[in-house]
Amino acid sequence: MSNQRISIKGTSSGLIINIGSGVWQGLIEELDDKLADKASFFKGGRVALRVGPRQLTRPQIESVGQILKRHNVTLWAVEGEAPGTQEAAAQLGLETQLAPAKPQNLTPDAPQTGNALLIRRTLRSGQVVHHPGHIVIVGDVNPGAEVKAGGSVVVWGRLRGSVFAGADAGIGEKAVICALQLSPMQLRIADKIARSPADDDSQEPGAEMASIQNGQIVAEPWNG
Image (cartoon, rainbow, N blue to C red; front, side, top):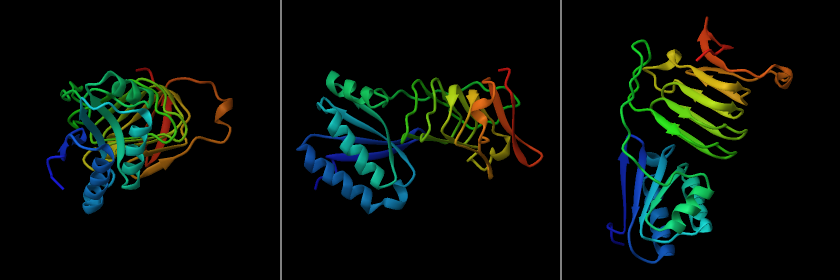
């Protein structure tokens, strides 16, 4: 098989897979083989597909996502020129345009983790987002969704899924998790883990920030 049909390159935002011309099923089988050959390298990564003018349907994109999932890789974006491809990707909650990440201006006392990732959508059950820097989500994190950041995580919405902040050892316990409504299945900051109490639904909703204090995760009112 020609290596030019499929190319894979790493970026600070994740892996980008360029899919060239050819029969779609054959290309997908070739991609499956490539991922299997270097399973340990790709494991835990996130992938954006670049498909050029190719028209993809929602089931075709879903089939690629299932193949990636088998190799412990997450599909987060599909960039294509065909409007139908863009619409199908958007219906699945995927990004449709890859733009160069821009350095963020962080306050002097904030951990410097490089580029931040901005997500403008709700994360549904089964969706996973991994990023080496900070993550800002404008939307909800539903139960069953998972977010993992090297730095801090800010959710401008309801956090009801699982969030792991401070995965970068250089940031670790300095990371924080903020949300307009903090009702997670699980919170993790560095090596500390916490869950919402069983009667959390009875509490008044309000913005909160979770951080590590005296060796444990503590949530307190978040005033921005």
